[in-house]
Image (tube, rainbow, N blue to C red; front, side, top):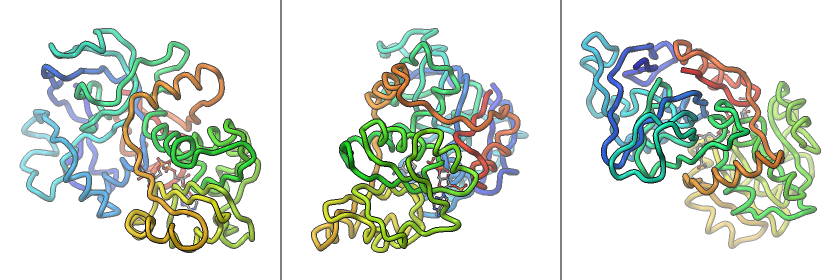
Length: 342
Ligand SMILES: NC(=O)c1ccc[n+]([C@@H]2O[C@H](COP(=O)([O-])OP(=O)(O)OC[C@H]3O[C@@H](n4cnc5c(N)ncnc54)[C@H](OP(=O)(O)O)[C@@H]3O)[C@@H](O)[C@H]2O)c1
């Protein structure tokens, strides 16, 4: 099969289109022919190895991939502790089940599915996922592209807006990084639950944010939402590049600040200090660590079929241009999800 392969952390140029062996599913595995994959900012972070703590976590917790690369491959002779485990990146995908292991009963060959590859590898013609991976049947009215645009963003947005923040009608919700994959879904969900929603992102994304329902938009290059004198019941921060303590001042007294993505400092502040500072003064602070849950994908599928939520798709690239597609995400040019079509 063809796959977008890299051997080291680095810029998009380290990715090459290569021929590698198609993995054969073990007893508890599913082989999926990828029809569409989408890029998350996390793929860019794992490509470049920045922030460092993301790469370290991924290295510790990622299952090893088992591909055979040609002797001429960019991976030849590369390995060791400091080499990335995920030679083929990509988690979010949609496609058709090509083969199933003996112990798999949830799926049959030919089923149309979407979800997340649990050892990466979605930027390829085929990917093997474990039976425990968050993969579900694709709703019939959802295209493969739409389905592949959803998985990781779904977990973050549903678990942030619905489960942790439990957004109620009439509440004021601010989504920072609202124009990204998770942010665009979070804006739509907060509107669905009856909130007044403010979306914060760069100038090129503000029209799109209004088109998906944001009541107010803030261009972060022009205005700091922490200094506009407003207070919010819920802040979902997908681009926390400032101190969590600063953002907390924008909460109402019973509000909640959820840190979903951003700098290492903001991550540690919210994860380690959040429980302590939540007991002192204004509002609560928490780190949102989204779990991969198949039931979330089913819930979002239902909302999609009811016409209540839809992914925002930027553009699609062929597999051979995976590096360019990743660059578009890393440099923040995409308006909505950037797709790879093998
Ligand atoms: N919490 C979890 O469980 C979890 C799980 C997976 C991933 N993540 C993390 O979640 C984060 C977001 O993921 P995503 O896929 O939604 O990313 P994304 O699609 O790239 O969206 C991020 C958005 O934030 C905007 N942005 C950048 N700097 C900003 C700033 N200073 N203020 C406001 N907005 C800003 C970006 O726009 P421009 O760059 O164009 O300005 C972009 O639209 C990533 O850091 C990822 O690692 C979290």
